[in-house]
Length: 111
Length: 147
Length: 103
Image (cartoon, rainbow over all chains, first blue to last red; front, side, top):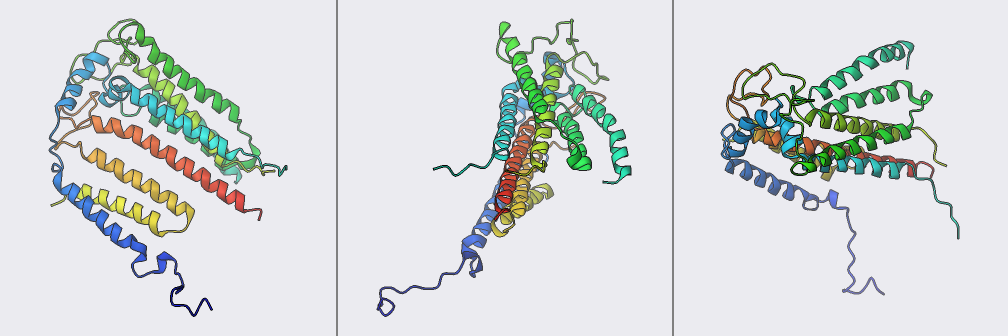
């Protein structure tokens, strides 16, 4: 008697990947593509950066203040050393997580 | 793996380690540094695991110990600068006793005993990254049965 | 018009995101996440280029007009974080495989 009612009209559900619209995936991909193209059109052209004051200070003063020829190394380890400390901690935490995931013994079914 | 692969991999092991240590130690003169050199040294462990497989047991405790030692050495180097000015201060630059040759602005051929505390930090990060990646490879590629 | 490098960046990001959305194999999804990270790193480096510039290292340098060194210091951290993400995802995939094998 339930199937004869007009209120309960169950349709057969299809998985969302076999639809024509693919569950909204293609439209969101096209919207993302449009956003990325608009971002690239509005920044500075390739080869002429606009904000160069900090980089000019680093190139001019890195050899005298830190004593190393490599400006990138002196930025990573001397001017911005705290970010390197955070990155080492991230690597350490990742290794700890992998160690805990992959060396787990099976639990016994006890009460 | 066949016999030729095993013998050649044992021969090529040592120059790879030395090349990785060269890139770590010259981090303040040429492109490279701690992270890049650490990855090169870690590829030696992956080579051994791929060639030999189940015949060799690489110990996990040794790699874990060296990784912790590298990170502790890095933190100690960061704290040693607080007696002068701030946290992470370069207390060995322009000082003329261990690593402090003064370098003026310009193109030069590169001197090895310059750079302050940067080569020591490169060494600490290199040891840490090498042992961390070797530990990841040993954990993923181990063929133990779970019981 | 858009320069060639930014087109490659957009291409890499779109391929990575469409790989996460449309594929069903676990290893392919993990590799697509890695491709997104590589595309973002390329975009950050391409922002700091100066026309006719050389590598910002003073040892036997061919000139004094150098590119910006700050984005290169930023992506060193970003590469290590991408490595940590990929390693954790792969270990989860290994755990799923070993858990389903005995059934």
